[in-house]
Length: 80
Image 1 (cartoon, rainbow, N blue to C red):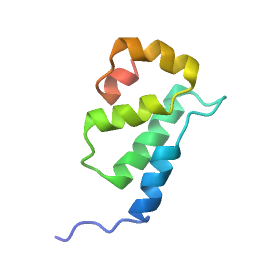
Image 2 (image 1 turned 180 degrees about the vertical axis):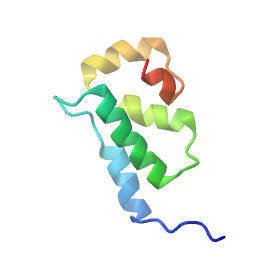
Image 3 (image 1 turned 120 degrees about the vertical axis):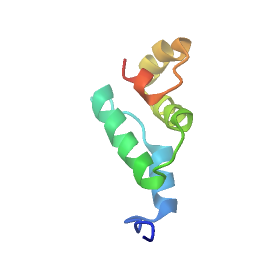
Image 4 (image 1 turned 30 degrees about the horizontal axis):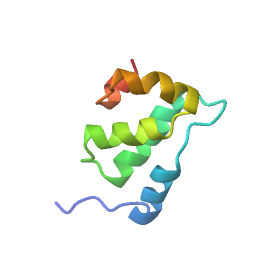
């Protein structure tokens, strides 16, 4: 079977991933799932560490400061 067609331009998806930041009133849960969806659309095989880097990079600063010392390595650890 041929690979499924991408519904969006990969360059646009990459830009959306890189610019995605957690909103001031957005829960971590909603931010996580929105960014995870973009990552899966862009590259279903994206590594856990790459997803985690994107997730942590877009967090609000006060949350990022609490999460960085925990040395989170996977998206699953991000949600704990």
